[in-house]
Image (cartoon, rainbow, N blue to C red):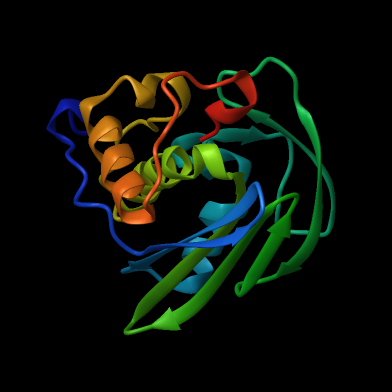
Length: 183
């Protein structure tokens, strides 16, 4: 495991926003050098999720049903309903949809996440870092996950937040409410 201080994310990229009133959908895509099956496992297996995702799962997300998710920094698990688990192509739960597409010997991973418009850049910055940590984990060069309040204190997250805010043409709030701290 490398020293996290050596980690620096690239520029804000691969993101779009679909707008519907106060609820906006963040669409963030990343091309990973790993098979859809390997990426699927990282998206659904609780042990893998603890390494990169902004939440812990009390069961597999790989089958339709109810699972408890605890977002880092929040004390109470949320009952989460996995509504679609079409391995290794589509995973849906709550306000989140993952699409996996075989691409150039790897996987194009696309996240669709509904987020209050005031926090869309925060979400983009957080998920950007999560995707970086996921890529390192899958490559066998893991770094500890960086999520929630810990991530928001880093200069990397602050830079990405500003870049995404500019890209989306929005201003971001100074302080998050508890519910907005994910990821």
